[in-house]
Length: 123
Image (cartoon, rainbow, N blue to C red):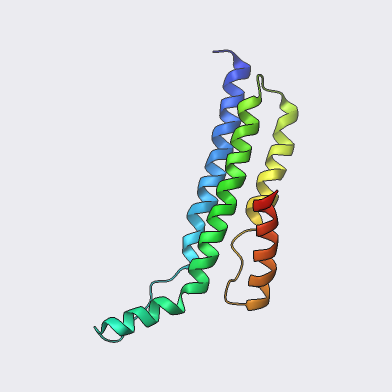
């Protein structure tokens, strides 16, 4: 294995780790409901109150997953490593992953993010 191949693998592994961490951090905003009784109806009601958080998690998970697939496809086409890949890749990871995981309790923020992330999914 050449030094360039090793460097390309390291960059790919780092990028994969950033995507994996971003996906993992999404679940932090989904809190376990606290139910005061053992009634099934109370559990279902508590879960229903989490629907915006669960929707935000699912949508963000899909967007990050699709971004990772596109990144994977691009890096699969590379034959050789170039140091010129470092900064664009780092900026891509910083801007795309940093935009996800908003406060899904705010309806206006939710609507804007759904539109933006829907555009990302389509493109």
